[in-house]
Image (cartoon, rainbow, N blue to C red):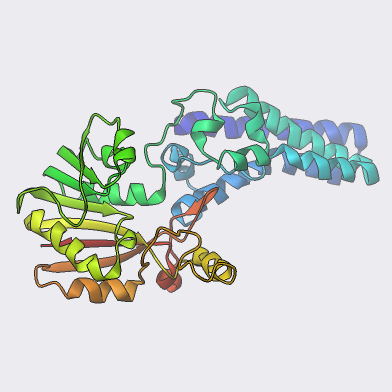
Length: 352
């Protein structure tokens, strides 16, 4: 969907709202009711600004907001486009009939116009339905490939951009690849991708033609020294016993070529959502991380800085806080500067 098409639809909403507000004034002679009708019909689209802020971490009134950002975002929140608002509007109509009807006319005209012109399911205009579908655009649109997004989470996009900045890359190893889905998104950047995982069941699900998978432990990589241009490991280090972490790092460094990079992403122990761990530990005091019981040790930014500085093989290291909040139904990728210590995840990029 191009800028011109969306801008045209905004113009349609404006003109329709203007026409309906004039219609309301013609019948009611009430300028405030007419104004409410216009606001309800046109300003519903203000929630796109909120979606853009969640995605980019800033507000803009430029045409950038209409430049297919939903395609890259992969989520549709549009909180104001929710038919649940019919309940409070109906209550307003009971006590203030003129104002309530004016609001209903404006609001419903917007929703109906959107439904007739966009490819979203009717159920997608219910906030509860979008919440159930985790606001995932693929489930909310009629066409399965409509605005399909290859980045399931913000950290996928961030790691993709980092890897893109390192090309050319001939051979990449993904340590702890699971079913290979995340590794597969890099196939256009890398000539050969190999993924290893200790779980046979996960590898059995791997059906990504761009990734060759191998059953192996991250603590004993079955490859020759200096055989990869890039080594990645996403959400693995927290699953390794703390006393074995240096062995894990050294295995990565041994198969990595000199002057090449490794990338690791791990959750931040101080992330805001870890408050749930603190609360749940009161109930399950024998579990270290109740929200993620399979985690052996989660790290802070300071711990990771000390950990990687201990290796003589690493020439350069950068610790980057990424993401602010990641919930099943919402993700905010932009980290406010003063809250970086409490970022959702931590990206480590190092040079051997």
